[in-house]
Image: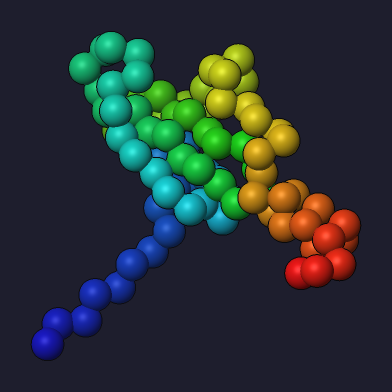
Length: 86
């Protein structure tokens, strides 16, 4: 049985995030390259645009993905500090 070793290469390709829960690829800017959307635990979702060579630029600012009120970590903190039935 072969052993597979995975290493974090996100920073190498410009996709550095914090604890991410899901990611998906789509051609967001219609340039023929697959861009990346990542949903994170305690920061807003992030949009990374592919430059055509497999490297990405964080294009989250102004993209409409900045939802500070919907962060899961913040919701958990709110629920556990305000709801005594939990």
